[in-house]
Image 1 (cartoon, rainbow, N blue to C red):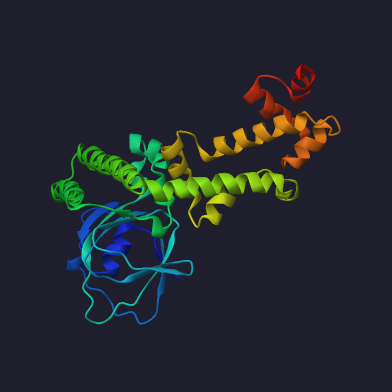
Image 2: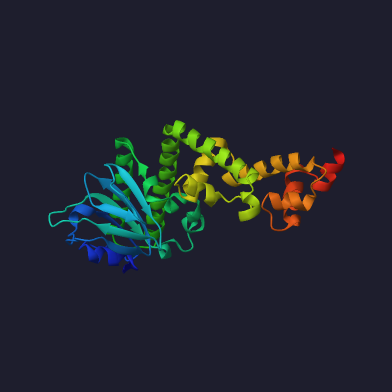
Length: 298
């Protein structure tokens, strides 16, 4: 496996010029790409955003191959491993890359809010597909960063570069929101399958066997990353996937509480809680009464 520790490691690997050790913007067609017959595993230790244009190489994540159409944005986070292969001798990529190291973000607002940009944890098949108009905006921001890096470094350089990266990421949030909207019917099907699977998980006894329902379990069922799945649910319903799970647990618990033959501890175990007091705490938080108080009221 090849480790790319610094931004300039990537640049030197593909013979691209380096303007700053922690951040770089590139037109990928300017690089020299080594012939690769078999996929090569590469682990990135910095953030990467790649704007795909035209035909290009295949990226492999896990056991899946992904061929990206023109106008696709792919996001990589530190520690992510990518297999890059099928690069022939005449290969000349068309696209652009923005690379920036976490160290660049120290003591900045973006460093404090980077976790808000959850698309860096999406799987590759959840990439962002942008329009021609959106692409022009992206390239304009990339050019602003490149221009700033090309000038002499002064006390304003870091603030301006990071501000433009942050602005770019905010636009990506908007673009992803648009993509969620355009896939409304598909998203509705995902939500319906999630709700059906959640009820089945609890009612079938899986909760008692495996524990309380987890977002990651249902995301995997839909072949989605937990972050993408959670963002989709939140944007479509206004509630997080975890809130949906908790609300469903409480609704089912209310029905079970009416059964006088079931102890409250049994109900807690049926719902997947390892400790009954955790069930009591959640129930009171959601309903305003403990399960025992709710049973006595009804």
